[in-house]
Length: 425
Picture (cartoon, rainbow, N blue to C red):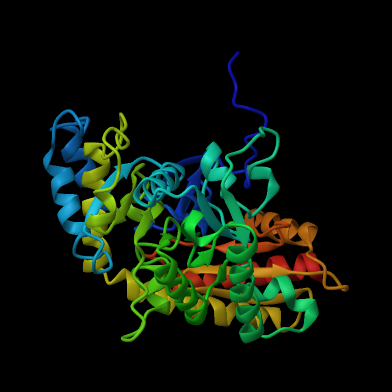
């Protein structure tokens, strides 16, 4: 009898029969408040009527049209629609299926456009599980262990993560100073600027613990990239499409005098409310440097996925979901901080928009993996589905769909408070 790999461990015991909005329903008819959103994918909630209708309509017209063989209207329309929301200057798009493929495409383009071999990534970043993407991932060894040798040409520099240096008592300015100094040291000692094709960075560490960057750090990256002819590649796979309370995660760090536009931007996850599609956007003069035949794929820009993406973008705009993510995220963080005030084991509540992490540590300040896992499971038993992340999986993360309501956030906080009381006493 065929069966799934034993390494595919479920985070929750739920076997879902259907979903609606932020709820999943199991085989017994129980309703679960889903604050995982398929790991940040179902941005408009489960089975939003407009997304369902768009996908159903497209299935009856054209399911698949391989986009280097023929062109189809949903792809043309999606390209134009993304042009309305992408950062200024990113006019050229290439589509694939997954975040890992977007990372590989960005890597390939950066190396071809610059003629340089090396990529600088930042501690705690997650970019995927394929060989090149895993080689650029530093959020945990589980994503890259056991199939070495990995890709060469990857150098790791520091990310301004206050949690990493909490026991040193450093504030955010000190952490940022250190990260930029370390980057200068990397360029001086490990990867000459003349050999460095790109900096690859997440606006908010995802698997690395839901840690936001900051404006001064990203300005420092842009300054060094411009100085040395290095491309700035921003991984917006998890932070894009309103997740952080702004349309793009990098929008939190931009200003009139600090536009911080990347040279290449990765996108995936929330773009199509659950249909597999990803891509990279780049400045035209960068994308033109891709070598002939280097971009393609059988299923990239699938017609049904493109139709779902178009509907998703419409729903995000029509229902003002970016603003809702901002407001509901603030509400969620405030509620979680009230809970945390009574429990010293909860050492941080952080995030942007509806990308919120609750960090656990033991009495000695060490990451508390066991307690984070116990909290996640206790919440699931009570009908609230959550995930964990962080280098030691010491962070409980909240990623509800952007359609989540004020009442649903209150319900989630109440359930989590009960779970915390049961685990931490």
